[in-house]
Length: 322
Image (tube, rainbow, N blue to C red):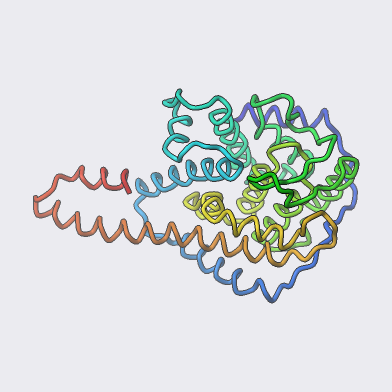
């Protein structure tokens, strides 16, 4: 991953983009968001003091990592199951389609890069970074998809039946829109709390749809970066992408409710931001319920272990299977 970061700094120096003042044109009903933000802050406090055995916490982190890669690729049509994704990540899988496996490996590199630079505040979150993350997302999959380069033609978003559900801006508008967006990110994204900024950044990038493919994965990686840098890592135990994958219809509806059927700023971003914040709460609650259930079961098992009715190794086996 250090090599990935070095390559980014080299790419950064060879692709200068002059900073300029930018603006993302949206409206936001802040009062509508307050309850969700309060709930999210409450969950963050809980995770900061979560009574979880370090060994068990590491297992939950591993599961969250696999579920995140599985979720963000599955949203875009990847056919692998979570267990198959884990096989690909460990090198155990070989019977999968080349494209599915490459998407998983590329996403691992992209998210690994995001996680690595999140604490490095000297690394700016801007247009260059977005293009680099996109290049990682599509690395070695198909050169015709031009990783890291903006599209040069139309790219309407359709459903499984081929019906157009969102019309993207013309390709000629993409570079100036992305410059404005990158400047907005660099200037502090209107000083919003990290979850709100992450939602707005995700929505704007998807609405512009600057690339031929990989826009969704790149948008979710960008949102992840803003959340991590803003202090919403949840100790690596929570997978927002898995939650969004399992709630895909509502996720897409929230994007369209805010962005409309074509990019016409200013748009009212409230619906998507509210959905996004509540999705983080939902993803956190899923983990909390699993932790609570595991704690109760382990307490019962320990009584049997102490009484000599079960071997101690049964506890570790249960955690692995939980």
